[in-house]
Structure formats: C-alpha cells, structure tokens
Length: 108
Image 1: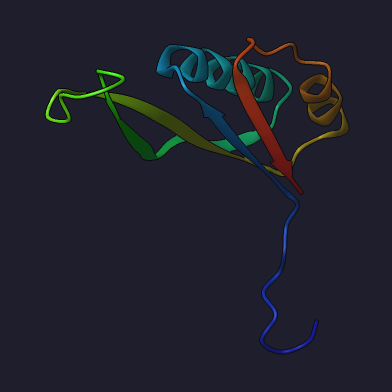
Image 2: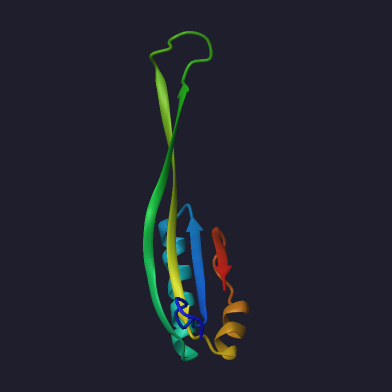
C-alpha cells in the first residue's frame, strides 16, 4: 500500500432533497430499514442545512407599491452513508420505491 493513502473501504453516499420534510423523513426511514435489513452498517440520516428562498411580489398590478406579498420555498436535505454494502444491499436499494417528491442522488 503506498504511503499517505489510507485503506479505502467501499461506501455509498445517498443525498436526499425534498420540499416537504415529511416526505424526506419517510424516504430516509425506508433506506435505513432496507440497509439494516440486508446487513450493511450505516451513518445517518444526517440533516443538512435547509436552503430557504424568499420571493417578494407586488400584490397590486398597477399602484400600491408598499403592498407586497412574500413567498418562501424551503429545500430540506438529508445525508446517509452506507458502509461496506453487500451485493444484496445494493440490489435492494436499487429496487426500492421511494415517495414522490423526493430527489435521490447516489455516489459510490
């Protein structure tokens, strides 16, 4: 083994994004249950900072510039690391049906 390089183990990093925190928590629970059932060890779900976007629009189409309305959009994120996954773990994670509205990004 070359110097300076640590012993790398296989890891799957799963990032979840959703506008609704209930949906993302439900998806994270399904992933954790599936990984634990197939014998993999994991870390998470780790809550990452929520990104908040605020949009301000004028209520009136003509005058009354002081009358405004604000809309907010929140993007919730979670991180799950699966350490030393077995082939059974990878297969079951690929066939997992997650709730609609949840974006999943997987890195090996």
